[in-house]
Amino acid sequence: MTGTITTGDGCRIAYRFDGPEDAPVLLLSNSLGTNKDMWAPQVDAFSRHFRVLRYDTRGHGQSGAPAGSYSLDRLGRDVIELLDALGLETVDYCGLSLGGMTGQWLGIYAPDRVRRLILANTSSYMGPPSGWDTRIGLVLKDGMAPLAGASAERWFTDMFRTTHAADIAPITEMLLTTDPTGYAGCCGAIRDMDMRRTASLIALPTLVIGGTEDPSTPPPHSHALAQAISGARLTMLKAAHLSNVEQPENFTKEALDFLLGK
Image (cartoon, rainbow, N blue to C red; front, side, top):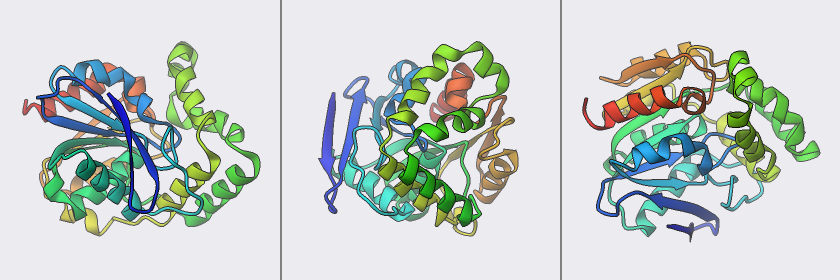
């Protein structure tokens, strides 16, 4: 089942449900430069236990891409408005990269809407701001194509890129078809984000997943996040940034073990 909602500021948010209608809902949130299809390796396994709700983050996929810089507050409120529109009081939540930043915001500011939280390959701060300003200027001037090669190098290890071209191709296509305006808007949200002090306010059951070879949100970021959240579980996968694609079986197992209380 697919559909869209419109947020209070007029932005379209696209979503999709998979799995049994009477199962508890697991919400999946995509990384910067991808869309809800990045979760394809997990959907079948997750939907055996959950009603899986995927959505395209503002600026990505089939969602709207308003001009200007976004904020983590706005991205978090998009999730709240999505849940309200669908009549969902609480969900389990799994977000990777930018999706994990949105998850942190929810854990801090809307903990009553989340049962359990998975924060994968993410960080509470990704400076310096000047680097994001440079990237914003690049995509608004030249589009998404110049980012493709460098992004693949950050998202996947050398070995995976050599041996799994077929798995990487759809991810690259997601990046290339992302609206540059929307991508730049989300870059602005990451540029202005700093939850290093507030992450400790998260009191939800939390699993932090990191990648041992992740150059975007390297292992110290995962360790710091897990240490900031009382009682958080940390697992490190031998992967770069998109660990759910590079290590799909291990990612799925770790997530399900946590969500099912194993």
